[in-house]
Image: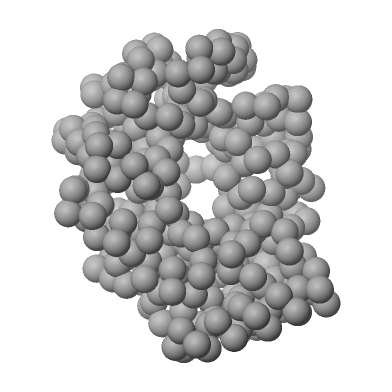
Length: 324
């Protein structure tokens, strides 16, 4: 499609929105690859190092984006490129270009290892809006958790360069809290403030999933620690030096009630679908129930069944899917 075609489609879909009511904010997560360059302790993908499922071709994903443009306003949709590690794909820049030229906003989730200054510059030139980068403790614990002795160094470098040279890109740091890094959190908070990071997300291990590289018992924190973290979040936010939120981990919230907490962060913005590398479609990325496959079901049919809007709250107990 050329630029004129996209402009006409945008005009047409504004008319169609009045018919099918697709005016809410939505998020499309694309698990673009199962490949990864690290061996993270909480990884749930046993084939990350030698994936059984090949990467979905960009051309197949572009077809999905073109279908979406027909019935929804791309300006109301964020596309999150995730994995595995999406920077393992040689065509990551083409992916960004394909998303932006269709009018969507795009976000990159990365472990930061390959996010050097040149890559940052090229991603920024492709209109990247946001980077969600993992930092899981101070150096010793982060490297243990990520399974590489240089992981912390590379992530720290990436953070410094994004803050210094690419302020137009919204940067969020996400930390997976586990037994070994609990005592790192205050130090990590101070370091992020010093680095001029503005947004920090915390999540805990989902006890209902299988981890590939370590027993889950070595990672899970206690319920007491869980509530201590939430108290810390409130204190940290009161300083107004950094915005800290708790991000959903896809289980029953351990009895936590996010609708009563302004520091709860829903990565889906309340409504989402997740497209996996093999074409399977799920709703919220934290929920693995398959609702269709793009290779044997029309994507619009999957979308219009309401999967992207209505299943999250019923699956995750305590979920307030409208919380931003």
